[in-house]
Image (cartoon, rainbow, N blue to C red):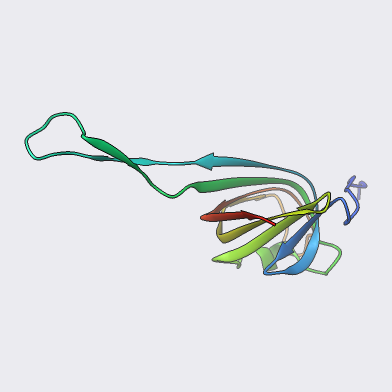
Length: 126
């Protein structure tokens, strides 16, 4: 099996419901915000737009789970979870998360996942 280069746990650590689960090589966050139009009866144009709460799409690359013994099979069962990413002494907490996509080439007992994509409804920097 080829060696997969992974950062040390202290570089980019990932926590599931405040429990350390492993490390990741990198991650990207996209913020999506929708607006709802408020229309007056009989008017063609909206009179205002109301911003809806922000949504966060997080893409994780090279997730290494070998630290705790978790596997791919464990991860796919998670629903409505909290995920914390720690990097350089800073923590970003994503709450009310759900998986959008997870590496489909992974096997049930794999300790490394090439990529994963999840959706979070809240974000907090600690």
